[in-house]
Image (cartoon, rainbow, N blue to C red):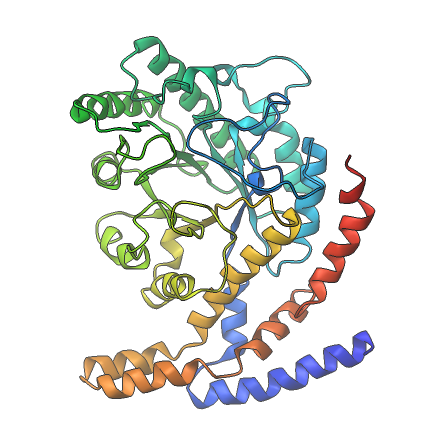
Length: 426
């Protein structure tokens, strides 16, 4: 089928779908316009298995594990940027990039993490501007470092260890603020630490007291909120910290409330039976904004590529139906080394956008009216009816509108990129 015929078919299908949704009171044109304004923050670490550019050794420790050995991993910042550019070209909308501190470019000089400067990320900032990205976000890298080998960083009982990691956190905030100022949009700078123990500790309180002190010191410098938004991220357990994690959900919820920080909810950082979607309306009763890291855990925090699952749809519904989108910063956090890494970005991000589109296409007003009237039969019937409405036609039209491949056509471009670029990285 020629490109023109393919586009005509998509437009014809969209016209029919538009009429179907209009019968339910949904204006699909307005929905697509609204959807195009949402920026997802893609995570750079999918492209190189969370290796970074500090050394050839790559990732080690910290309860993080990338599995698989699919060929074509990015080995340099330029390769990583090229892979990201390809992924962005296949994803509808204008989006952001989330960086970790270990992706600094130091021109071959040894610069430890407590001494990182904004200039070590200058090429990333310039590239983000050239690519017209919606902004940059940033994370401290409190893992894969000799000073994290004990399993403790900001919560260590060794004052010299704490001092080093506090200095790293301060450096990261300054880097994030520079990114925000130069790109004209706040950089969400997130703090996650792996601190915890494999077996049951005697002193839980002591480490948490130290963590609170370290965080207060780390955040003590006043920086422009128009350029920087501070976030703290919890975790239930990790590899090597199965019995105790210092930065639990309760700890960081309390800290974010008391200190006025964003709370990061990572969908892989809770018990497998917990619904993160249900937490959103609870924490946003008391917090101004939150950061959301979207992942897919399979039995544990395994960071699988995001798929259009029931859990993802519930997450999007809560964000859209609750009117929370202006207060939520959406980022992705998965890393799969067993499949094409560019494809992983494209699949995961497109699924996140699809989930948001599905939620926006629902006649929320009608559903809410039924619920408030006690018509739970009608509510259930309509919710189920929505599952078979022509969503795919609206999605394809959105891709066409945003000048990216519709359907599976994007995979052909990734295959070609793999053959022409990735396969040559030996």
